Amino acid sequence: MPFPANLAPVSADWKKDLSASVTSPAALARVRPVDAAVLAPVCARYPMRINPYWLSLAQHPLDPFWRQAVPDRRELEDQAAAADPLAEEAQSPVPGLIHRYPDRVVFLVSDRCAMYCRHCMRKRRVGRSASTLREAVAAGIDYIRTTPAIEEVILSGGDPLMLEDAALEEILSRLREIRHVKLLRIHTRMPSSLPARITARLAAMLGRFHPLYVNIQFNHPAEMTPEAAEACRRLADAGIPLGCQSVLIRGVNDDPDTMAALIRVLLANRVRPYYLHQMDPVQGTAHLRTPIETGLAIMTALRGRIPGIGVPQLMIDLPGGGGKVPLLPDSVVSRGPETWRVRNYNGEIFDYPVSGRPGEGDGD
Ligand SMILES: *Cc1c(COP(=O)(O)O)cnc(C)c1O
Image (cartoon, rainbow, N blue to C red; front, side, top):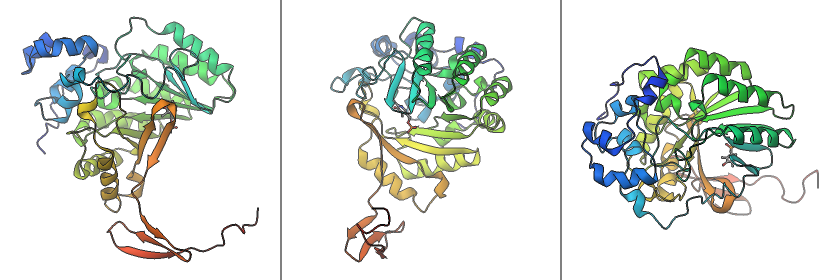
């Protein structure tokens, strides 16, 4: 593999790593061949943060670490798309809490990340506000407490694991006190973006809030370094079911071989692929977006090549807040009255009997 696998310094202190992050174009230009003058206006609009762990892995402009973290002047050239195409702000009854589906909410408890992904769906806000969100978090908890339909709370951001253990524990405890909240879920990139954050102490703390699910983001198999694997192991050993929400990114993972390799490495580390996201049409990300057909072609290629438990759902998120919709490659070739004609994973055609009588079910 042309990508550096294990160049990352093992760090015992994630906060030290964070404060040693590269956040200015001038600092990046000192360690990597970039033009600080070109990157300055990009970083002024969409912040950059590359922590030492991720930087050690980003060696070359074509590698997946570089592409996901190093700003690109094309981010400013993308003016057509909307900043918030999913209408998240319009669906926020209180700031920082998105209530789209009746039974679950996305609770944005941090606006910060250990690394700012260039493909971020919340580019409009992440890394930009000055506040600590403390008041918004209190208002969000109040809303959840007074809305009995909410059965699941998904902590997101930013990255919820940017909060210190005590602050996170406080939020989880408050949510656990609410009788109608059955499930807790955390969406974080820390196992891949800064694995040192997943301390034994954090894993043990999270393990006290079951049922608690953690969905992480890995986009390329090289992200599963020994440090990242250890972070996943700690969470899994704390009894936390791990899912992966990958984003299809041009030049990073938009081919079946890379995706199959990513899935194998996730399964080997007890992470179950959950969603493969078509990148939302968010302003500033057009140069990284793939056509919808690319995702479908990858899904077609995966079928039969990897275990069923490793096949993620390809998701699009509808503009205007319509919600997520899974897309599947068409396997039904034609529908007759007696048989359907179906294509298998090898492209071979079979007839399948249409049994049962439509309209004559027992119940209706
Ligand atoms: C994606 C999303 C969820 C969670 O969806 P799942 O399909 O349960 O993973 C919930 N609310 C909003 C607003 C979302 O965008």
